[in-house]
Length: 475
Image (cartoon, one colour):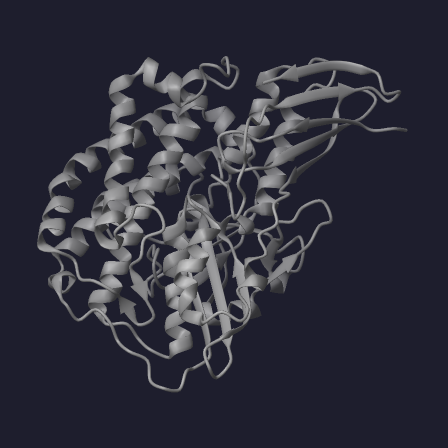
């Protein structure tokens, strides 16, 4: 029997390019679904032979959406290679830039990429169901969204000189202190941004409560979860230990980032260039896990800022203290993290060390020659691992990019939603959009070293077993 196949290409309102193939049986029911990531980065190989200290700039070019995440993870790995501990003020400044990245990235995703589905509905006209539609329907809200992202980007620019691909971190610290006028400018707008974050949380919670049955069933499944925590089990985004919990919320492991290869392995499938990380001790696929906002809030016990911690308590009630499984709850979790980032910005600005000029420690002549840098990128746990020779030239580079950790979950989500909503005998655009919505929950960033030129239309063709074209949708 010749299988019938639907192809969604590209998946829209994500960073980067992917396609989904949906395989149907003779009755038009979904049998299997695949989320294909066809880009090939090659960063690990072409970095070999380069001086290790160049990586803080090279790895930013992996992505124009989350360059700060790679910039900071690389800096931490370079600290290890150099065998040097950055001064406390430098760590505070790095974290401040990191919080700016969270505000701009999470804010952009919710308002620009996810909100059109929530506000207009999954079945709305695609010509309206986009950021332009948001602007036309609620220009005041759209302006607030732009301002929230601007605020985060300006923090990055004030520290690193540029909003995209900043030059700020160096092995052992950062290259410039915070200027008093920049500190004051960041502080002056923070309360306004907190108000916008609270409004966004209200929108997300209102939608989830009004559509609770859908939220609880849509791409909802048990899994393991991973995220960084402090010694008390609190949320950490820049530093900490890696915690893994199972589907019931039981602790599977908590370990130092440098030991990650003892706990994390990667599986390969022939239909995707994106690997499938998993918790090594459970094996594949039982050890697959989720990262990012939902994963982080499912593994932490608390958040160290008051307003975000109160929201976390409400989040934990969704599934009576057990891990929250519905993928649509990623949006709520994401906005709780925006609130935390804005609160944390205030704490950082109030720390006397933030204005210190003691911002760099210098390595000794002899390098440690190995370093691992792990942070929580907005999309999940990000690993940078470097080995060098005695001259500091890279001999091995291993990267596990945040989105890669969610590869299994995105495939699982797309498959579940396709089986629930897609009818091969009666195609509608809304059916296929639901599959994309499932993937968008994870805010995947697939733009790594990939650049497109020209138009990218989407065409979905339904072909019968004998090759007859049954239906076609073009967007």
